[in-house]
Length: 581
Ligand code: DGT
Ligand code: CA
Image (cartoon, rainbow, N blue to C red; front, side):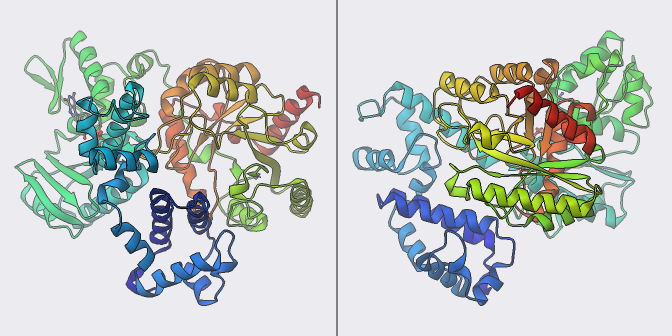
């Protein structure tokens, strides 16, 4: 395509268009149409260029002739007149204002017309100075909500999703390693700890000759600007906008520096406290008994010198890992290799890009023993939810695939059933009983009070056919805060009802949050790390889900998708038998 318009660019512009026409007060149907088209392209299982060349664009679900024409213009010329005109017709800051939760186009127009507010900065000032209170619909609660929203939006700008930061960091590491100038090169900081979002990249090298690696790092092609340069540290801003620090240590200090830079701050402080109790001083340069350095060749030896087992970086969040290491209670963390199969997989029957046969082939190629198909239920009209006939067709197909596999691979029949606003599931019990497993999910009405939302979700959990609760908090990292819900009560209910909690592995979800896993595990909950995949690429999401499970202290025995086919089948059967339906 000319000017290299990618399908991601098209998706972003369609999403922008959806917001822009809403801002302009046009028919809401129009806004939804652009959003739907974006969702279709997002999960397109083939090359957009090819689709356009074959004139098949307007045959795709949710893409009518008018939108198709605009996309074709964009692909052919690199711009879309209609989009550029719309963008030019509103103050530039308004676009960003839309991203603040609770601020819709109407309120933004009001702020502009009555107060001349055009940017997030102006809004923050007005909110802090109590200048908004006279506007209709802008009471104190709204002001507080706006200020919270502004903080969130600011935070979003400063952080990156983990996979994006990791890819940048790996490229830097690769370049440093290839140069062969240093003894060791490692990642540290939030990346090494497997945090879901990352502010900046921390890298560390060991060398006695710092000059050349420092110069090399500063001159890498992905570096946009050098923002700081000293003897032991070079700071840069990368082309993609993220900052990276290279720390240079001597080979002898390397393990201490690596531990220090890995953090977290809380973990470091707690560990220093423990060292002090043992009469040892600890800093980034070493462990010292008085003036004497206690030599350590690795992080393992540092922990050992403090009477501890090695604490994996993912656990270094000051959540009790030091006590657990001292008492030999550290969990035997789950790994990707423990996973036997994937649940929560979408097909073309709803909004996925692949047919069941292609999904099975890919799963087998990756060494899995089973898949659990779970398309959307009928009220998810936005995503092509399945009606009774579509379910029947899918089940016949799955039966045929399973028969052909002859036990070598198994497809479980599942559904991602919407949790309706009142907490009921989206189908009658008779239909639900036809599935091996049911994933219950909130996909609408996010803005209920915490009390209502908690009641809604708990009611869904109390349904005897609910097997798994999908993405329990509904967050979208760097885009949407979790919905208001009493997550502890939800986890208590899941434990009481034997409902499995999903750790959704999509890099923008990673939900259940690892911070909640330990509590849920103590209450006796089971978990499933689910890719929620819509495309072939989605198979790779599992990695991020496992990282999150590890941060949540989970072991293979905590995850139902580490069970073998027979065991999982028995687990599903037991639940359905207990339901007595
Ligand atoms: P980020 O960058 O916000 O995603 O998270 P981190 O953990 O990478 O934080 P960063 O880059 O500010 O610092 C890297 C590590 O350096 C951090 O995890 C622990 C260590 N560190 C930084 N500041 C302090 C401090 O004030 N005290 C201690 N003990 N350690 C610190
Ligand atoms: Ca960092």
